[in-house]
Image (cartoon, rainbow, N blue to C red; front, side, top):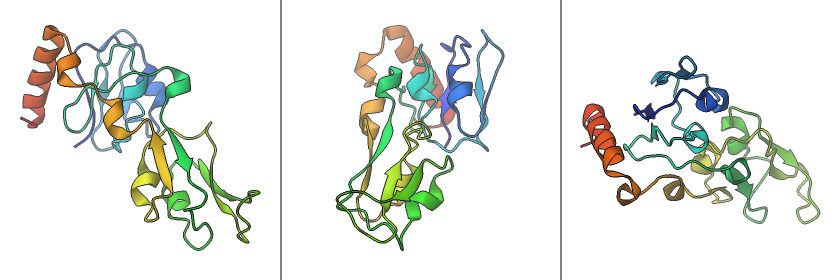
Amino acid sequence: MPYSIVETCIGCTACTKRCPTNAITGERNQLHVIDPTLCIDCGACGVVCPPEAILDTFGNVCRSYKKDQWPRAVVIEEKCIGSGCELCINICPFDALSLQHTDRIDDFFGVSTVDEKKCTGCRLCEDVCGWDAIHIFPLKHEVVKDFSELTEEEKQIVTRARKALGVI
């Protein structure tokens, strides 16, 4: 199930600029919409949404972060097998990962390295890595708000949205 936008959307367009697949459309100052056929459930939209009007695939409200706190991939070099694997590099739709030589790892081709300017923190690399060498920080459960943190109005909106999505 894709991410969705609820009626508290202010139409600021931050999500449309951050979405790596152009799945979000909408006019400025109007409610935006996520195309479920294009959404890859990466959450890049949720972390940039000022009114926190984006729900994840489970109907949880995505927490907004300042730019310097946006989710980013971190490679644990000692765990990365580098050449011969490259699953993370092949799955990354943003070319944010590449093999590089490091001072500590002398593998012939190097280890996976993150280009932070290209990384959206979509978690695809984290999900595909079988060596537990890539992690996205903040962690997945940290980028959603607990239901108890919402105002009564937000709780009503989220509950209606969850029902419409068939989550509850």
